[in-house]
Every structure is written in structure tokens, then in C-alpha cells.
Length: 185
Image (tube, rainbow, N blue to C red; front, side, top):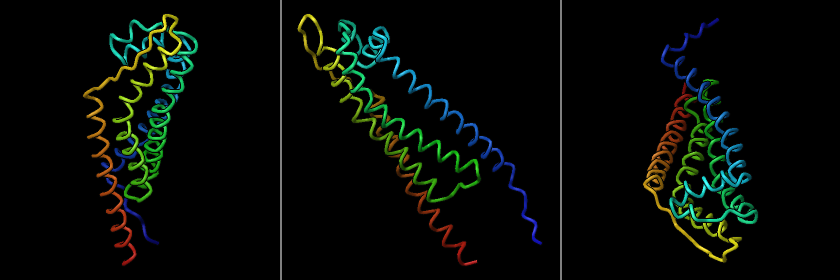
């Protein structure tokens, strides 16, 4: 009978970190969903969303029920993309917590997460425009507006998403090579 050596302490720490991050992402998924729903249900929270996305220009928008409903539709798109990414990264941490670290499956989860981060970059200005149009749609004064908000965070999402996609590609190739090498033994 062969006795398997104990994993190195650094791997134990990594697995503990992965378990923690699995919980952190699960809690984040729940909180983000609840807060996003609240942001479009409560008019004051919708105004805060408008201010966060549109800056001072969002302060003068009158929040109406039709505007809130349309804002919910607009916000659902990036929220859906974000949740897809968070579920993927949670599955990756779950794989890591089980000890499945250098696998094509884990690389695929990282690739999905990277793609969703990358997609947030062009989505952000489009959401700003859609949110401003939605919130001014039902404005009783008849004023309509389309405002586009650009942020350094959009550029940062583009770069980080690209880094994650590149890392996932390298990880997938490393997993393929490791699997190939294991088949020689």
C-alpha cells in the first residue's frame, strides 16, 4: 500500500483561502442581487443609482414609476453579466477548495469570469446612456436626456478582463500539458 505524502503547507493555505473566497463570492452574489433590486424599487435608491452612474446630471432627474421600471430593465443587463462572472469564479474557488487546481475546468471558469469583467468595460457607458434615457422617459416636465458616463474604471475593467483571459488561456494550456505528462507515467 502506497502512502500519499501530505500536501505542502502552502497548498493547505491556498485551499483554505479558496474555501473562504467561495463563501465571499456566495455572499457577494446574494448582496449584489438584493441591493440591485432595492436600487430600482425605492425611488431614493434609484436616485442614488442615477447619481453614481451619471454624476451631478442625475440629480435633476425626477424619478417616476415608469422610469424606475425602465431603469430596472437597463440595470438587469450588466447585473446579469456580473452574476454570470461571479457564479463562474465561485465554481473556480469551489474546484480549488476540492484540490482541483490546475485543470481545464478551473481555467474555463476563470475564462468566463475574465470575459464578464472585460464585457463590463463597453457595457458601462451604454448603461449610463440607457439609464439616463430610462429615468427621463417618464419625466413629467417632458425633458428627455441621454448622458454617457465614462470612467477610468471602464478602462481598468478592460485591462483586468484581458489579463484574466490571458491567464485563463495559459492556465488551460498548462492543464493540458500536465494531463499529457501524467498520461506518460
